[in-house]
Each structure stands twice: as structure tokens, then as C-alpha cells.
Length: 420
Image 1 (cartoon, rainbow, N blue to C red):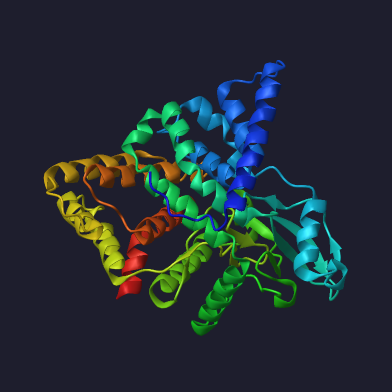
Image 2 (tube, one colour; image 1 turned 90 degrees about the vertical axis):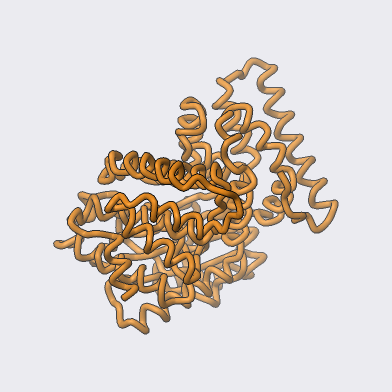
């Protein structure tokens, strides 16, 4: 698997290789001393010790039950929720390096994180003006570690192919590229702040008050620290709590869906990571979008292909759906359109038979759906643009939310209304 050269200095690569060797030696010594957990648990522990990039790979393993053995999927479930938190003292060094004395900005910072991810930790805090905020603090050397790890990622894929032979039928290069692009995007908090500002301006331009994004405090934000307004609410997957906060949750969700579709067509960016932790029902009944580290933009070609699929699949016109995917993938290979249509029929039927109102394992189930779709494309030489897979996944998120909260609402029809 070929990966771009992302290592800027030999020293960076050597430093990370040394760190990796130390972690592997430590775990090997523990194993020799009698601490011998099952192989899936051992691999997860090694990945957690290696941090950042490997935690992201662990999240992929946990999200692909159709590819990886059940014992590995179960072992890596913890990677989906939160990464192993770092002591606040380590992050405080980043705060001081980026902002100077934190006491100049904050009257209080909770040392216990609200969330801990592979790139950053989020801590609650309070400004001297009394405003409640959250501080997103990048893990030390996260970007450098990521770049160094990417150069060795081909070795990791060899290990993954051993435990999951099905991966030989999936494009590991595409998986590695997705990891690289998404994580490098998430490392630049200045860009995330710009994304939030762009979306905030868009919401104001359409006069919307039902969907909100957090305010960014620029004086306390840098490329590695992002201070934002704290939202109080619940994730949309907590159905009972959602219904307590809004008398008509289906209407609130319809407003959010309409705004999101508007942003796809009429804003420079759209939110491209709407998993259950990034879209909230706030205590005052509004919908809050958070975490703009991953955003997308869309070409007319991708939009038209998606709209063709949205009209063809519900009426089971799989020949038209196959043609749309072939044009989108711009393949030069001779494709058996009938065979592709049959695979799409099976894919769609499987999707429909799934309990779409079940939000208990939403992120994992949608990861599997997307893997199946890209796997179909790969078998026919079709390489979907990243913008298509990003957009499709967000639509599937909304589709599941609406099945649970607004079963009479047609997500795909909403998109076509925006297009008119």
C-alpha cells in the first residue's frame, strides 16, 4: 500500500519508532512475566498505549463487525466511546505554551475531562466573565505522532489482514487515506474555529434560530487550543430525554434536517461528522451542532448522483442506481450493470430489514453500512469520491434519527425539496 510521504524530518520518524519499540517491549515483557490476556485484549492494550493513530484504527475495528472477528470487535468497543484520558498536568503544559498563564483567561478549569478522544481532550471551564465554556486541548505532539505513524501504517495493515482476511476485499489504501485526511483535518483547531464561524454566518443569513453552533472565544483559542461556549443538553440517541426537552421532537429534527440540507447546497461547508456525540437536543429545545473538525463540500456531480439514488432506490430501480454509481466513480472498466444492480438490490434490502429506529449501536451499524457500499464499488472498480461517502454517511445518520423521532418524515424527500 502506497502512502504519501508525510515525514518532514528523519528525527521525527526515529523518535516515534523508538517510542513504539519501547511500548511493544513493555507489553512483551508483561506477557513473559505472566500477564497474558487474550489476543484481542492484548492488541487493544497495545493500540491504546501507542495512542492517537492507533486508537483511530481501533475505532475502525470496533465499527466493522462484518469484517473483524467478534472477539476483536468487542475488545475494541472502548475505543468508540473515549480514548484513555491523559492527566490534566500534561495538557496544562499545552495550555501554557499556547495561551500563557491559563489564569488570565479562566477562573476555573475542571481537571476531569468531559470527553477524551484520540486527538484532543475536552474540559469544562469558566471565564472570568462567568460564561461557561469548554476547552478542547490537543494531545501533546498529536500531529507529529500522526505523521510519523502514517509512514508505518502499511505494517499495521498486514496485522489487520491476518486477523481479518475479509480486509483483502476492501481497499486498505482508502481506509488509510480516510484516517490520514480526517485526523489531519481535526488537528488544526484554527481551521475548526473558521468552520464554526462560516456556519454561524450561514445560520444568520437564513434567519434560523432553531439550530445553533457554539460561540468561539478567539482570545483563548489557537491552533492547538479551542475555547467554545458550553452547550447543555442530551444526544439525539437519548430518546426519552429528548422528548422531555421538546414537546414536538419531530419538528425540531425536521428543522435541523432542513438547515443541514440548506448548508449542503448553499453554504461553503456542511457538518460532515454528525455521529451521536456531535448533534444535541439542548435544554431549551434547540438543536446544537458541535465539533466542526470534519466538514465537507460538494460538487454538482456528487449532488446529482445522490439525488438520483434517492429517487431510484425507494422505487427499487436498481438499474438507474447502478448507472448513477458508475458515472460517479468514473471507472473505465467494463462493468456488468445487471450484476451491479443485483448487488445494490441485496444491499438495499439488507438496509431496509435493519431496525433503523434502533439507536443503541448507531455508529457501528452505519460504519458497517458504508463499508458494505464501498466494498460493492471496489468489486466493480468504482472508487467513490470522499465527498460522496461523507455525505452519504450523514444522510444515513439523519435517516436513523428520523426513524426514531419522526417516522413519518422522509429524509430523502427533504433533500429533493431543497434542490428545487
